Structure formats: structure tokens, C-alpha cells
Image (cartoon, rainbow, N blue to C red; front, side):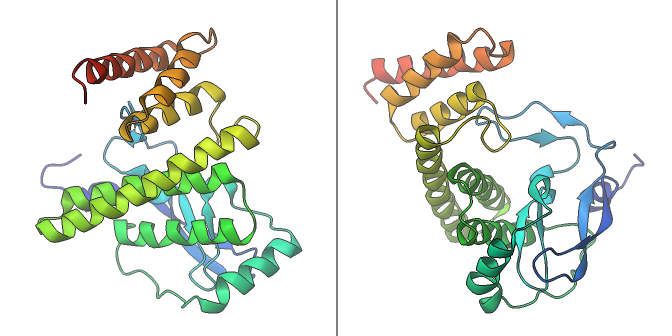
Amino acid sequence: MSEGITPQEKETQYIFDKKYTCPCCDKEFISKTLKSGRVRRDESDMDLRPKAKGIDILKYQVIMCPNCGYSTLAQNYGHLSSLQIKLIREKVSESFRPRPVAKTPIVTYDMALDAYIHAIKCSEARLGKQSEKAYLSLIVHWILDSKAEMEENADMKNMFLEKSEIFYRSAYDGFVKAIAEEYFPMAGMDETTIDYLVAYMAFHFGQLEVASKLLSQVLTNQMAPRRLKDRALELKDRIIDQIKNGK
């Protein structure tokens, strides 16, 4: 990278314009997409938020048709049944205002937030899995956290954080229901990953018994990756400290 390059210019080096045909309205549109060969993954956060060098990949993991509002995770983009199309058109597209062509060379957090919110609406409309809606809510939580981190105005920062908590709670409740009702994998994650993820969320919301039970499942699972077990042990220590301190 040359000196003096801006973060926005750096980000453009990891993306390209890709043409899609919307399965809901049959119109073509362009969506900015990750160059998979260029993106270098970093270690994820303790809450499993994915990270990469030079770019926030979360902004590019959702695709939204700017004409009808159909939105979904990039990994799920493709065929829709005739019933799903009907439901999305009735419950999403009828009230959707077409989006103008973006003038920015990258996807902003506001643009990503718009797309993910519509992905949740579309998932609800087409009767998607609970785990899918939970994962989308989790990503909205992460994006709102990023907006709060960048915001200088204290009132706006607090507003983003409050909204973030609402979506995080929705994600947690959704994954708890999904564990009881669905088969693994969920949202592209295996059982041990989901157990750790939900344990971390339970810890965040003060549900220490739930967190401890799920962490035990991770730690006793012989197939769980070493790195995930290390994180589970670290989280277990946090829980023990919190119990000792009476918090």
C-alpha cells in the first residue's frame, strides 16, 4: 500500500461491482462484493464477530435489490419459491421505496444497516428459520456497535448502543429458540460454535447458569477446535470472577 492512501481508498481494493438478477422482481442491479482472494481474515472477537485486514467484511455479506427491497445474506442469495416471492412482494416490496444508485465507492454502515434490516423483514416474510433471523439480528448489533464507536455526539452514540442492545437481545432469544427447534448447522455454524456464541450472549445478559451449561458442552466436546475451547475457558473464568464478586 502506498503512503497517504485513505481508508476508503484502501477498502475499494478489496471489493468489486458484481451484477445480480433479483429472483423477486427479475431486474438486474449491481452490488459491491468482496474479492475473496484479496481479503485476509483476522482472528475474530470474543463474541465471534468476524474480522479482516483493511475492511469490515460484514458490510459486504448482504445483498439487497434496490428496486424491490428483496434482501438476504450473500451466501443464501439465489432461488426463491413462487410462494416466497409472493410473500416478499406483499409484505416487503409493496411498501419499499426504490433506492437510488449509491454515489460512494464503498458500502457505508448506513447502507449495510438498511440492507440487513430488510433482510430480516424478508426472512420474516418468507417464513425463514429462526436461526437465520437471529444471525441477521446479531450482525445488525455488530454494525450498530461500529456506528456508535465512530459517533462523536454522545446522544447519538447512546442511541446506537441502545438499539444495538435490542438487536443483541433479539439475536440471543432467537438462537435459544433455534437450538430447541432446529438441527445443526445453524446460520453456517456447527453445534460447538453456536454453543459458545450463545454462551457469550447469555453471559452478556447476566444469565450465568445458561452460559455455564453451554460452555461445559463446548469444553467436553472432543471435536471442538482448540481455539474455541481456549475462549470457552476464558469466558468460564470471567463467569467465576463475576460470581465471586457478586456481580
